[in-house]
Image (cartoon, rainbow, N blue to C red):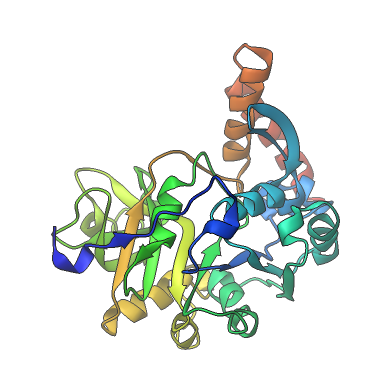
Amino acid sequence: MNEDVSRQVVTPSVSKGPSRFPIVSRSVVIPAAGKGSRMLPITAIVPKEGTFVLTKINGHYRNDFLVNHVLNSCIDCGLLDVVIIAGYQKGSLQDIVCMVGPEETRDAEFVVQNQSFGWGLGKAVEAAEKAVKHYAGDDFVVWLGDNIFDNTDSIKDMIYSVDDYFAKILVLKTDRPSFYGVVKFDSDFNGSHGLITDIFEKPDVNERAPYAVDGFYYGVAGVYVFSKKIFDYLKRVEPGKGGEFQLTDAIKLGIDCGERVCCYVHDGERYDFGTWVDYNTYQARFWSEVYSEPVLLDKLNEDQMNLMLKLKSDF
């Protein structure tokens, strides 16, 4: 293994709860300011992060708010200093977290960021600068508010590795590069983690070839660890793909300026609740277990899409 990507991992003890985690990264920024237009009509009433998701915790099934599932995952990783970037329907989101959210995060700090078109994830993260700099430590975690993972082992490995990277990024193997920011590993990539030389936001068919690895791609999975220097680069980026300020462009600018970025491959499933397809896929998985029979996912997706197309023009 290349010496540059070797790392020492501080293994947290989960048996006694998050207080036993080493203080490496304790603060987390959860961007949740988008309008969730791909999840209409539900998001016309409640924020996307306030939708109910069927989960299985300690062998028991229960419905919970999406944001609470994300918060519980953060707690499981020892991240207790929470900054939530809220905008659209921010009042409902604050009520959910402050009244019924996990006890450890009910004092989460809310930063209001009205996420208008053309701003993007880069501006959402930049809005957290003042709040993040109040917390101790040189780095912090960004965890997208609409992402659920079936396990957090690779995330803990990434967070608690002792190294000196400008950024660490969770990635997953995919054959749909146009849905992700994709990364290009250097020649010493070992299959589980490695330094990257480039990152590109949602490449089209003419842009993706340099990022392919054996016919697949490694897409950004929605969890990052950043040095606080990221805020300097975010202030320097120009609108990019889709006319938005892209977080990937700030990371790329850092790489071009000599910063070291390491990516960790997620070993498991990840669900993006920004789309009905992934929402239904996740729900169907657990409903099938509850009823001990398959849920007709194709029919569920078809019915949901027809409803969305019928009502979308009204919102």
